[in-house]
Image (cartoon, rainbow, N blue to C red; front, side, top):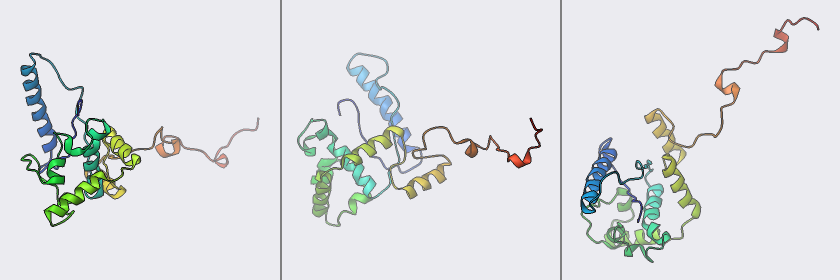
Length: 190
């Protein structure tokens, strides 16, 4: 995109995404600054990332990324966007930096059928709530998937990986306030 990049990565080792993006960022900033005779930072802030559950959630993210140039009115078809994986996944073009995900491979055992299925999935009508959900999960860096997926991630991390209830916890939930029963009080008559 003109002001951001979407990557759908499946790391082989813990911490690989952070290290890859750190290295890429350092090299690209150096290249860009040297090319344009400038210095200083280039990025607006740290990258945002969220875990994505396999299956339909992963395919929805694929579709979201592939259709982003269309939503931005940059192209009329995802194939028209130079920096997209759509060339490889929907038409079989060679892309040396792309390793298809097993979920993509599961679309069909036949490569031609797989590519047609992928293109049909990408070009299917998009539910606006799906687009907004992906954006919200990424912006808040929450795990994108079903409740069981989120709960499994939370159990592994020992912290929340999804939306929390807004507002302060109720006093009785915080354990800071104890209500006394009137029968327990020996108050003098006034």
